[in-house]
Image (cartoon, one colour):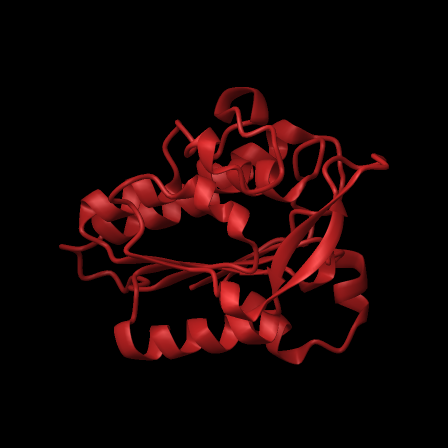
Amino acid sequence: CFLVLWPGLPLSCVEMMIGFMRRLVVFATVLLFALAASAVPRAAHVFIISIDGGNPEIMLRSPMPVLKKLAKAGAHTWQAQTIVPSLTLPSHTSMLTGVRMDKHQITWNNWVPTNGVVRVPTVFTVARPAGFSTAMFVGKEKFRHLLQPGTVDVFNYDRTASVDVAKSENRGATNMKKEGNVSARVVAEEAADYIVKHKPNLCFIHFADPDG
């Protein structure tokens, strides 16, 4: 089962996005446990694939056979709506928690170790205690803010392969900060290697390139 998302497109209807993400991501994870004793065929492995800053209109017009094959085979939407402002860390936090920024309180958009981790449950909070293996492969270190203790078995951000990219903290801001981005190719290769060997039940994969 694959879930393909692109959080960077700024749209307005926050409630629709939150409701959709809660049903599609959290329900899909809980479903793994709920159907364990049932004879009904179930997805043993769920992959949440985020294309950071991706534009669905461009994707639909582009020759992307692998992505479109994954979308057709799994759960996907071309109309998902993100929060405002549509910054990487706050929007992905809403994606993986199902709540708005005013509730999850991740209002910054860079790696700030002293800020700690998100304080509301994530999809991994549901999956890991239920006995499912979890993993995250990301192109930006700021995703460490989603690492609640005991919820993610493997977190992979390959700092040695990162390249500094200048980004503004907020859209329209003139002050620029550097952050290390790992290319989608490296993230994909490292995720694929781990998936083949360990077959996690729930795996989040983040591709940073379109947002770079």
